[in-house]
Length: 153
Image 1 (cartoon, rainbow, N blue to C red):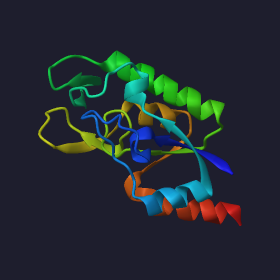
Image 2 (image 1 turned 90 degrees about the vertical axis):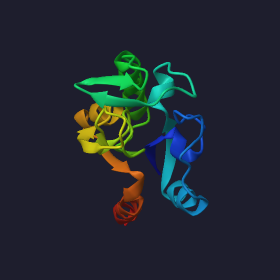
Image 3 (image 1 turned 120 degrees about the horizontal axis):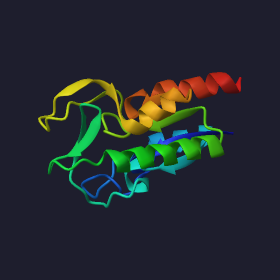
Image 4 (image 1 turned 90 degrees about the horizontal axis):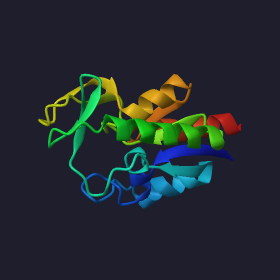
C-alpha cells in the first residue's frame, strides 16, 4: 500500500486557522484509507503557528497574516517538515487543502484578503512539487483514487 501525504485538516484535525477543520466526508475518507496509508501534516502548525491564528495569504513572495505580520519563516519551516515526512515515508504524491497559503496548488488567494484567487502555489505545495511530488487538491480526489486503482492493476 502506498503512502499519501495529506493535509491534517482534511482528516478532521482541528488545525485550520480558525480552529476548525476541513474534514472530508466519511465516504471519501474511507475510500482514501482503502487505497493509501495516510500520512498527516499541517505545515502551518508544524512551522510553529498557533491554532487558532489570523488568516494568512501569500503576497510578493512572502506570507503575511491579516494583522500585517510576516509569517514567511513559519511557513518555510512547515514546508520543510512536509518535505521531511514525504521523504521519510516515500510519498510520491500528496492530497493538500486547496487555496491554502501553505498547501494550495495551482490557485491561491492574492494577499489582499478579499477572496481574490490568483495562479500560484502555497509554500509547502511549492516545495513538494520542486522535489517531484504530484499534488492533488481535495477537488481532485476522484482523479487521485482512480489513478491509485489503475496503478494497482
